[in-house]
Length: 96
Image (cartoon, rainbow, N blue to C red; front, side, top):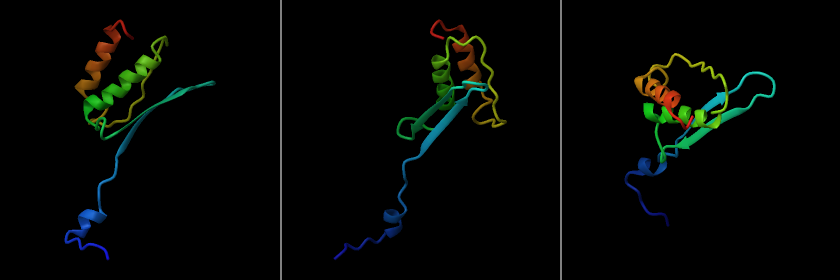
């Protein structure tokens, strides 16, 4: 016999693991793609989490002479002070 669950919707509709991905695609012949994948237990989709994916990408391609970012017009993720501050830090950092 199965146990009776009074709040059966809490048992049936449980939250699943949410996964986020940020993709950086290189244009041209012999291009390399770079994807940063994380789940909600590591980080969310706050502005500092999105900025950290760009910082991880800059560490991956730090010897590249020129990098151009084409971003969509999403103000909550791409056009914020956290991302601009991270870019200013990365340009002036000796690590990148």
